[in-house]
Length: 463
Image (cartoon, rainbow, N blue to C red):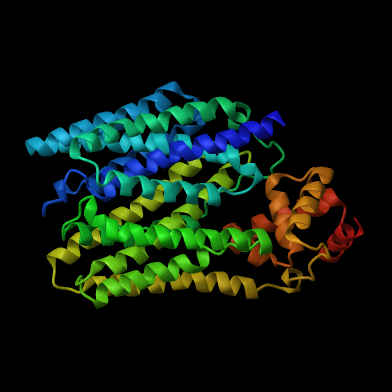
C-alpha cells in the first residue's frame, strides 16, 4: 500500500515538474519570447538551441550506461535547471547587446540544460510505466503547460521575466521529490527478459519525420510576427482540441482498449501542411492549429512509448529517451531549414513538403496495414477469450501474469493475443519486429505450458 501511495504522489509531482518544463520550452523557444527572429539564421533561437540540444542528448545518451540514472545524479539533476536559467539570462543579454557570439554561447547552455532535464524526467516516466503507459499523465501536463503559457502571455514584462527565470527551479524541485519516492524503481531491472527491446530504425525514422511540419510552420509563422500574444489564437483552439481528443482517447482505452490518438494525428498534420500551402501563408493560424495539435498529441504518444520501452529491464531509460527525443528534435531542425528555404526561394516548397509528407507517412501506414493482413496461417487472428468487460479482462490478465511469472512486456503481448490480434498486428501496435513478438509469444507459451493460441484461450477460459 505504501508503494502504491508513493506512486500516486510521484505522478502528481511529475505532473507539476513536467508541466513547468514544457511551459518553459513553449515560452522560450516556440514563441521566441525575446522577440521574433530576424532574417538571419543566427537570430532563430529555436533552430540553434535545438541543434545544441541534440548534440547534448547524443553525449548524455552515450554516457548513460556509466552515469545514469541522471535524475539521481546531483551534477545532472541540479546542474541542468541551473544551466537552463543561466542560458536564459545570457540569451537575454546577447539579444539586447546584438552579440552573435553571446547568443550562440547562451544557446549551448539552453540546449545542454534542456537535454539533461528531459532525460531526468524520462527516467521518472519509465519508473512509473510498468503499470501502463503514461499517455494520460503526459497529455495532462501538456494541456497544463499551454494554460500556463496563456496566463503568462499577458503578464507585465518584468513579472514575466521573473517567472521565466524561476521555472527551471520549479521543474527541478518536483524532480528531486520524485527521485526520492521512486528510488528502488529507478534502479530496478527485469533480469528474465530474453533480449532488450530497442527503438527500431523504422520507428526512429518516423520520430524524425513527424516533427518536420511543426518546425516548418514555426519558421513561417514567426517570420510573420511571432511573439507571445500572437501564438494565443493558435494555442487556445489547440487546447480545446487536445481536451476533446484526450477525453475520447481515455474513454475508448478504458472501454475497448483502443488508442484513438495515433489514428488522427497524421491526417491532422497533413491537412495543416496542405492548408498552409493552399492559402500561401495568407492565414497561417488555422493551419497552425492543425499542425500544432497533431504534433503535440503525437509527442504524448511517443514519450509514453519511450517510457514503456525504457521500463523493460535491460533498456537504459536515459539512452532510450536520448535516441527518441533526439530523432524528433532532428525533425524540427529539418522542418526549420525547409521553412528558411521556402522564405528565400520562389519554389512552392509548402506544397512539395506536404506531398512528400503524405507519401512517406502513407508508406508507413500502408506497411502497418499490410502487416495486419499478411502472414501465414499461424499468424491469423483467433477468437478472443470469453472474459466479459475491460475491467475484468485487465484483472484477469494481471492475475495470469503473476501466476505464471510473466514479464511486463509478456503480459502486454498476452493481452493483445487474447484480443484476437495476429503477430503482425501486435508488432505494428507495439513498434516491435515480428521476430521479437514471436519470441515473447514463445516465452508465454512455455511459461503457461501451452502450444497453440487455441490452447492458450482454453486455459484462460477455464479459469
